[in-house]
Every structure is written in structure tokens, then in C-alpha cells.
Image 1 (cartoon, rainbow, N blue to C red):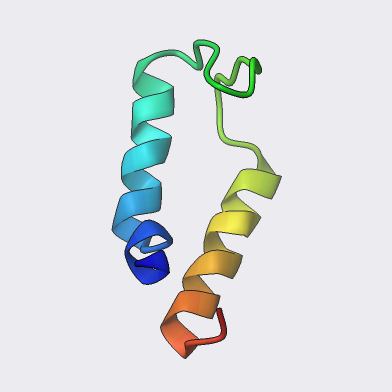
Image 2: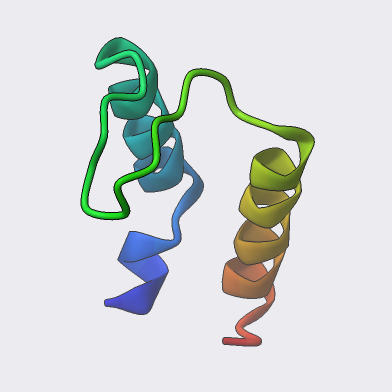
Length: 55
């Protein structure tokens, strides 16, 4: 299940959803408008861990 959650497609879908709602406040109560370098680094990190099986 964690592989599905951290899959590139799922993470990109989530990112697009955040972008489409213009970063309106979610559960975290933080507004987001654009992905930061940290967001993209975390996406790449989790994708690598999922692909190599190092969860």
C-alpha cells in the first residue's frame, strides 16, 4: 500500500490537486501556491525509495 501512496503518479496527482485549488488551506492549515525545491526533492527521494524497495 505504501508503494501506491508514494508512487510518482499518485504524488504528482496530489501536487496537481494542490495547485488546482490554489493551495487553499488543508488539514495542515498551511496555504500552498507553488511546489518548492524541497517538495520536489522529497518527491524524488520517495520515488527512489519506492523503486529500490527501501521503505
